[in-house]
Amino acid sequence: MHYLDHAATTAVLPEAAALACRVMTEQFGNPSSVHKMGIEASGILETARRRTAALLGCTPAEITFTSCGTEATNTAIAGACRRRGRGRHIITTAIEHAATLNTVRRMEQEGFAVTYLEPDSSGHISAEQLRAAVRPDTVLLTCMLANNEVGTLLPVKEFGKILRKKAPEALFHIDAVQGLARIPIRPKQWNADLISVSGHKIGAPKGIGALYIRKGVHIAPLIVGGGQERGMRSGTEALPNIAAFGEACRLRGEQMEENYAAVEALCAYLEEGLAERFPWAVVNGAPDIPHVRNVSFPGCKSEVLLRVLEMHEVYVSSGSACARGHASHVLAAMKLDPARLDSALRISLAPSNTKADIDALLDALEEGTRRLRGTP
Ligand code: PLP
Image (cartoon, rainbow, N blue to C red; front, side):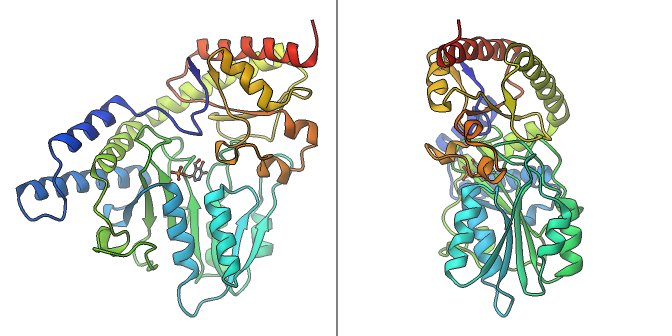
């Protein structure tokens, strides 16, 4: 099996799985209980919070655990917009994940005006575009750190500076789901107020995320109840997932540099192979991180190519895994021509991949594209 779809999700790290299992079967107390098992559970919770905070470059008190990246983003956007007596203008980008786009659309239905910053054909958005969009009544800028479909980075440091200067009351939310454990997260340097992350992209199980809320920022919770997570996210804490997330943050944080270098080397190997064997294929956009490559094979419909690769146990994605069957809104916003839109594959790498995975992908692509293009 050759899994090259790590931007969709990735395997749980064995250490994280072992810890989750122990928390499920042995240390299964409720962190709110005042007896010994509750206190032990509360200790596990706070250890995970410390480890997560370390990877996010913040204090443990600034971390709220959520059920996923999507919930963290919903909480951040709705919470920032619904602060009383503020303006009614949101800025986001046309290349956000559905978690952001659909929450922003909900805010639009509540009467907020939204500016969508458009990418250029390389998949980038400039600081100048943001500067022109900020208004005195802007309440929120919400954008991603790394794009999940084309691997471009947004200039969050410049964005943060501009927002602070031109709309000091506005909040800055960053969806860092695809950046976590790949590049350093710097909330202070970026002037970020809110940052969403997700566990299942970095080796924790699915169903765990976190929201960084800068000290001093007050937003209303999305879910109310027993007041867990300092009132920001009620519901008995998903301790096995939280512990596993903390462990994944610790391990992936320790290995960030070497993992980055390993993925970079694999990506270079992939790009060489593509250029040599498929000189007619095109890499979409100008990616900044080596973890994601979006490549079009004109003349080969991505869905069909995907099936051929699957027969060889090679797993990649067509566009974003969250946008099944729909043309990618990211590639469409980059104004790529239909032939490229229809034939795009997203290949996303992790440090666990090997050159053998890339070779298997290239061989399967050769067979698939030869068949689909009708060449001998
Ligand atoms: N944001 C980005 C950029 C993503 O890639 C994803 C997942 O694909 C999410 C948010 C949603 O995260 P989760 O699956 O934890 O809800």
